[in-house]
Image (cartoon, rainbow, N blue to C red):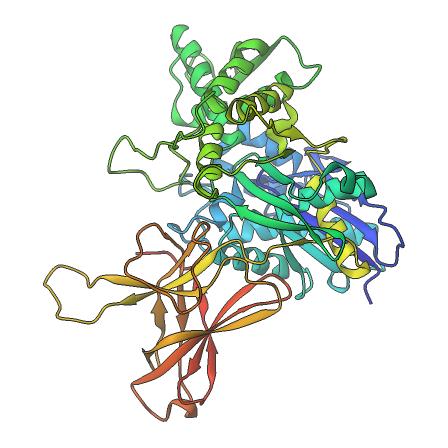
Length: 593
């Protein structure tokens, strides 16, 4: 039996582990201090582990400079994660990996292949997004087992958080990384905005029932280092008790603190140019990371009025030297407030245009950087004939440590809904640790019968079905979309997908194009859409049919069955139309052609 319930926030910028005793009558959540290398030869414990990975040189691997309390004597250290790696991102960007979680959800690259650091030279060793995610989790697991040697993590109850906007494929990859790192096979995946709500519920106790009445609509606005997530949670009454139900989730938006750092880096590069200094690509990446550190210091409540931003020199006159300019606190605040949280109308739609039809392969950052415009689109998409109106706001994510950014978002909401202005929820909000704490609280509530958020899957899922008919040279057959799971399908349930049988190839992989939608709330299993317009495509699903059940056939008729496990994983199965067997469809996450 588990001794502890553990919540893990595998964040884009920082990762955190929180825990509570499994037999506690009331949850007393604690944070695990995580030992990590902060400088060569120096180890300190912090409550968060920066989600950065540094690939040391051959000489550094055996130097002993990166040994941790659990490192075996003389071991070859092939990767360093945490604070030291975060610092190295500015000085040695071509050996540093960041934004791993965003890469893990990026369908256009081989997430199991050694591709990171992206764009680094052939002389630099590479690591896959999956392996990098595993490395962060392995560090947390090692830190846990160093602190609690009698409670191995594989025997504990673990809840691991993922963005609400992660599709089924990205969730599966996250689970795969966690299990490879030593987490139990029955770990639960929990959406990050829900975890933030659970942390708030833990802080408020029974007070939340007075603060959120029946019909209240809570907007969770989560802007982290790499992503933006919106979630709506509504309050209902059932048998005289207040219940929470997730109403809607937004799309996976690659806009956040990283984009802000890039905006600052561009501004600083112009100042360097005024000094006659042109930065090369290596220095530009270094500048990006330097701006992140400067932004965090400048936007702190008691931050300095100015902060120097420095990059290492590369020219013959600057070998061993540095180049530096100062950034002013007020200028940075205005740039980020107006650039990422501009005032706009509620009917504004986020821009989707690109400068060119060609684009480099890399992280698909949003062309629209305005969080407020994305929020307007989200509220409009989930309303009934008009934008849905939240009554309360819960902030999450490190970006909202800046009070000016929180205030601007509230001002924009007030302009949209002047008659009933959404109010921030009461009580302190721990933006750095809330997700991990909320995940641990969720695990405790699930065991002890505390309040839980209902809602099921946040997306409807579809498979592409090629239409029959005569082939036209050079033109693919039109693709229809068969709904195999509706929005809100609850954990621990399954559904047969009615409709026509499909024939799939026997003895070799049969692939199905897979799609999803966060807004098509009326679609039900068996519904056939005439096309895939408006749906988001994910990784293909794949199965290989074989064995005696298929009786040596070349093709075999099947139908589908959907299942959402108790652990929050979506599964799709092929069922023999002749009752001869069933085959689980697996995600094909290899590199796309």
